[in-house]
Amino acid sequence: MENLSKYKEKLASAGLRATKQRLMVCKLLFGQKQTFHFNIEDISRLANKSFNKKISLATIYNTVNEFKKKGYLKEISLKGNKTFYDTNTKHHHHFYDEDMSQLMDIEDKNVSINYLPKIPNGKKIRSVEVLVKIEDIK
Amino acid sequence: MENLSKYKEKLASAGLRATKQRLMVCKLLFGQKQTFHFNIEDISRLANKSFNKKISLATIYNTVNEFKKKGYLKEISLKGNKTFYDTNTKHHHHFYDEDMSQLMDIEDKNVSINYLPKIPNGKKIRSVEVLVKIEDIK
DNA sequence: TAATAGATTAGAATAGTTCTAAAGTATTGA
DNA sequence: TCAATACTTTAGAACTATTCTAATCTATTA
Image (cartoon, rainbow over the protein chains, first blue to last red):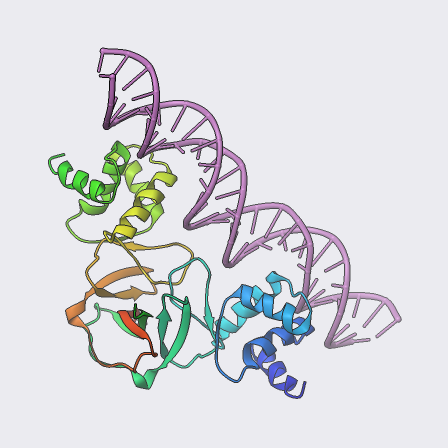
């Protein structure tokens, strides 16, 4: 419970008051050693398991969406029904393991693209995302 | 109505009988000069407009899913609620226009990647997809 | 401490997709 | 050709993810 102030700042800067539920969400999202990938259900399940406390889905959706707007979380471009988020907001890429349905980060510096077609008139590039789908060597 | 046999073959090879509704879906999907991007609702709307005929959503979902399994259509990896499909099944990449919510193809030969990190043990690459998000120059 | 502003919540509402069961259509074998 | 069978289509139910709503609760402020 030592670095709660870090989370309080984060919440404040996103225009959110620090409440018990939001602090729990922060702890789950940003209290990990490594960045991670999750969906809303994961957070709900983790809150149950880690704190023995049920946080309503509405609260989780609200908090996650505010953090996304603020740039503290990134939504991942992946097909499928559920929305996935990434606590790694640095520009980077992904491996997607088709057999495990699992995502792994690829650091931006580990991918290089040396040619792209010219972009349409009046447009500029916002981001370039590479998704490397991998599967078991059968 | 001249190249219906082309569609009949396609349906047969996907294990589907050629019915009025499925032939309409085929015409909409594969009868275009250019490859295109669509979702289920688009096909439903197009059937209404082009043939003045309502095809049930269930039929469209079934047919599109069978074609996807068979490799005649590709599902596009994009966040968002609706699933998008691509009639271009060649390996290729996309521009995604954030302002217009519009997809454009980038031919595979127009993108080159000269370095990728090594892939995890026991895994091999299935595909490498590049998504270039673009936006208006404000 | 009272008043008020904001937060949380359960559950309703919505949207995309899949499932189901009944009715329709095509195919097959006699 | 006809009946039996197999496959299709369909409307609507069911399901799932997400958002909305309105009532209750909590925190802040004066």
